[in-house]
Length: 460
Ligand code: EPU
Image (cartoon, rainbow, N blue to C red; front, side, top):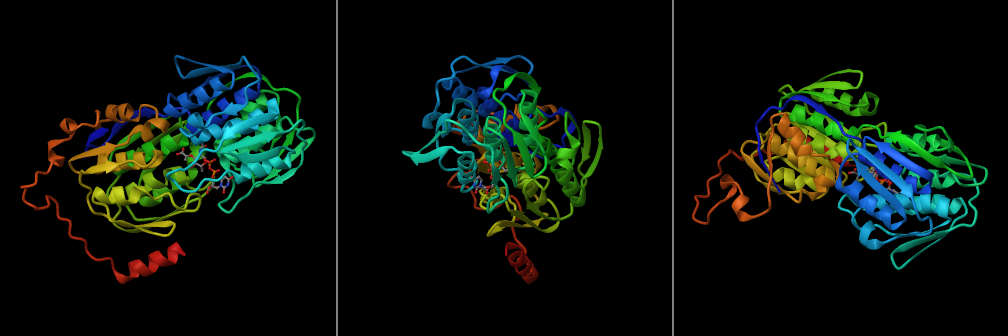
């Protein structure tokens, strides 16, 4: 668990690591290459290790070298089974489906199972692969896919919640091996999909339209080994931007791709955060008072759902009513009750969180429910008065490289300790005979009638 002492403005320079969500599908695609792959700027994360294990079980040798380098080389192209025991630990393991089917012509991949951020079907992945000619059945919790040949075709990949990121990755990679040309309409435009496309093109694929909703893919016989540098992690960058804003600090954030952060930058500016950018660097300064804001998480280039929780944490400190909607994962709100434990006034209404902001946060014990929720709780704890404890930080380790070390260099006070009663800060231990007096004023002014009306309108 983390023990966090809040209240320190963060100052200094911090470098963003490589993007988890770009590295994972690229690693998976390496199993379809005839020749070694060298990846640079690969973050050291639990998810990268887990996918390395999945790939090893599929005959790919993975070796991590110093300086963010990962090499991958296929030494056995026969295995086709991605087992439940590995896949259940990380949904992104499903990214091996397209590369396996494309290159090895068959795949048996476990369905990933439940997820704390909401229902996450893979029907669109399967629809796209079937359209290419694969025979697919789902039995005993596994997807069985086979195709002696894949044939290029026109595929519409949009769903009720927009495009699918890893679904586009799977279908695009399989289509590289299809005869003729494939057109994918309603493809995801996320920079991570574009990075995978660049990686595949460098390996000999013929993909055009990357970054737009319409992709054209001319099939090829083989893809060859390649070297590639993974793009910077826009979600980590956004998390650091919010860290500066919520603590009233000033950070210079390096190794960013500023165009990937356009929606986050615009939103933070409208909240009152000052942001200047040049080249691959951003300077972000938090000023009080912050302004409330209504935001909606959307597919790229909108505000990423992966930053929704962190922005909500920030809006708890903006004086007034904010509304946060998530159109990508409408159930991704498990952080709300935990933010409330830190003293925030947030309530959920359907696919929205309604924040009555401006109340100071105060330290408490909270529980992380998923990766981005854990980042949001850490940010809130940095802004809170007193000590906080964040449990289940293994979620954070899945997707942020050494985040607490990076933040501590900037002035944060975060300790990683084992979850035992002795490690609990004194200030959070209440004894049964303690006087039941709050240390902070917790009186809520009742929300004005306008608040509810407006919130309900937004929820609809
Ligand atoms: N969806 C379907 N059917 C499908 C696939 C998706 O209905 O076959 C729905 C989902 O339920 C969701 C929406 O479409 O409502 C978007 O899901 P998408 O498939 O795009 O998500 P994903 O590919 O499973 C990736 C990231 C997530 C990120 C989402 C959205 C990786 C490894 N994961 O997931 O990242 O939130 O795109 O941008 O790339 C994270 O890093 O914390 C994380 C959850």
